[in-house]
Structures are given as structure tokens and as C-alpha cells.
Image (cartoon, rainbow, N blue to C red; front, side):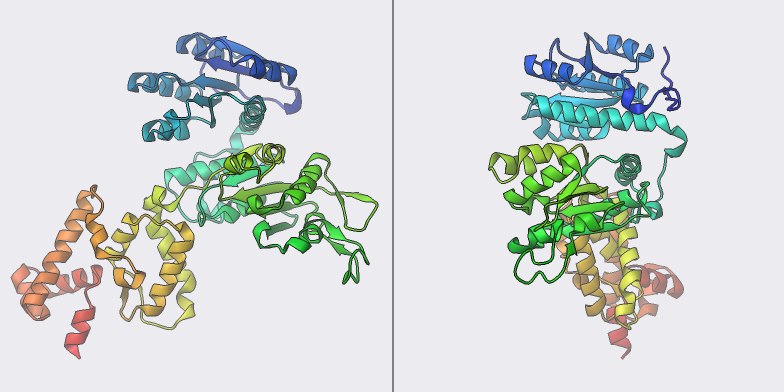
Length: 472
């Protein structure tokens, strides 16, 4: 069986002329409406009856770069077999179709997130299915187009972000690939996860990097000025319009426009934005002439736009226009291994704000930061660090400086052996110092360590405040 990655010679055949083929596994039909919609969009659908047949079809080199898997049965053995099939064919982008209740199960959600390009819920929506297939096809063809460019590891310096955990490596890889195409991108996720950083990274890795990058918060625009801010106006278009003004869309020509909090855009402006995305022309307010603008649009929202559509607060056609490609930066709690690096990065960045003797974080602070849930994500971490740097009156930042409760140590049932040892060591040192009225020499004898070793451990755990008070 040939499991090697298939590469495309663009000089022989452009990406846009490649046949649209999708392999479906797990059912005999996607439904009349979906089959008809995909057929009208020139998609050829092939159904496989089992995983072995699917593997054979993919391995035959028939260019099935996109596959749909219907996850009806989610027992562990099936997921293991499916994982093996997906890993054997990394050149294929898999879309999962799941029951709305199944995707709420943590095990299933984690599996889908790790191994699938995206997922759809039943019943299938023809338009959304087509859009996701187009996005998956574009990504896989792009990956095959320039295999030498896609490294196994991406440095955080390349992306302007901090952290090298596996989940961030996957994000960096997606950013790099998405940057090479010009389709709109919808960046979703919780507040404070760095959606604007993701947008800027896409711009910096793209062929548009030498053009402008402009960001605008749609929720912060005064209602009466949104039209003018986005599309511009002519002199005399309204009272106070003393001269022509280019809108931010036109000012971004040749570059990338990031529309943050797109869900807060009023419905009438959503119509105008949709029109621009369809024809790339803008009308300045008060003008009878349209202007063609070359801009890539990235959008972000912390609200669920699909729910907003149901509430008639967001246009479904605009959602599909923006959601050609989608990225979701992970919340901080899902990459706790990055927290120490992130904390030290911002400590160094802001240490010049206040002249002090603070040198860094105590081991206990770092441990509690890794355990804390961070509902405000990176933004909350930055705020706590800046506050601690102002309030701390010793060499190492302690949990109370960060506003983190010590009881959080016991709030997590899973503690590593190294963490348990650190906590036991710190507890023993604190108890000994208290018994010996913070006389280091006496405590060193009691603990059977040298005085130098005890000083090193005291600094390691940030237990110097009482010692300084005792020395005064």
C-alpha cells in the first residue's frame, strides 16, 4: 500500500483546476440536499463501506484529499482503528460528522479536535458542508504544493507569540498554512486568548506582509460613524465632513484587515460588509463611484456566531463568507506547560515600569499559576503579573502578590511527583524555620543540610520575607 504523501506540480496543473473529490465513510448517503449541493459545486462523492476500503481508495493515488467520517459508533476500539487510518494518511483532511450530544462528551471532543480538520453536526447543512469541504481541500492542496516549507516545528519567534506546547505547535502550523492563501479567516475562542496576535501572525507569514495590517474593534465604533470608519466618505457627505476620508478598508489596500468583535457589527453594516466581500468594491459615503480594493479580511469574535444567527443578530450569509477558514487559539488552561515561559516573558517586558529588587517568581507562584484555570486567559495573566510587580516587596513574587489563593494547591486532584516533592520540601523548610525563629544555622542543622544549601532552597521557594524581617 502506498502511504506516501502525494505532491502537486503547480506548473503541470493549477490548484484551481484540481478535481473536487470527497470520500465518505460511515454511511451510504449524506442526504439528498447535501448530495445535490455538492454535485452542483462539482464535487465527486465516493462512498466507502469500511475503513479498509477507505484506506485502499486513498492509497491508490486517486487524489481523495478530503474525507468525511460519520461518527455513529464511538467505542474505544473504533476510535483506535480510526486514529490508525488517519495517521496512515496525513495528506487527507478529515471532517467528522457527529451527533450534537456526542460532541459534548470530553473524550469525543478531544479526539475530534486532535485528528479532524473540522466537524459538522447532524442534520447536515448543505451550505456549511460545502464551505468546510472547500476549506479542507484548499488546505490539503496547499500542504502538498510546498512540502519543503512546512516544518515539523514552528518557532514562537516566527509567530510573535509565546509558547511551544504541542497545542501551540498545531496552531503555528495552521497559521503558516492559512497565511499562504488569500481566503477569509474567522478566528474564534475565549476572550484574552490572543486573537489579534493570531491575525497579525497570519499577516506576517503571508505574501501580504509588506502591506499594511490594520485592526479595528467593531464593538468600539460609534453607531453613527461606522459607515464612515469602514468605507470612508466624500467631502460634504454629512455635516462636519470637511474633506474626503478614506475608510479603513480602502486604507488597507494591499494588506490585511482584522475586524475584531465582528459579532457586534450592526445588521445594516453587515449587509455592506457582505457586499464588499463578494465584489471587493467600496462606496465612500456620498460617492456615486465604486472603488476596487485588494484586501484580505480576517475576523474574530468571542461570541458564538451560530447562536447569534439563530437570534437574528448576525447574518448567516456573512458568517459563511467569513468562515472559509477557521482558527481557534487555545485557552491558557489547555497549555499550562507554557505558563512559566509566558510569565517570564511578560515579567521581563514590564520590569522597567518600576525600579525594584524583584527578580522573578517563586516556585510556589509558578506552581499555582500552572494550576489556576485563568478564566481571563493571557490578558488576566498579564494584569496579575503587572499588579504583582508593583505590590511585591521582596525578591521573588509570591502567590499573594498575584492574588492567587494557596488553597488552590489542593484544588487539583492530579499533582505530579515533582510538584509533590517541591511542596513537601517547602513545607518542611517553613516549619523548621518557624520552630527555630528563622535562625538559618539552627534550621540547617535540624534539616541535616549545609547552610549554603538551605539558603539556596529558601530562595528557590521564596521564603525570604520572614528572614529579612528577622535580620532587621
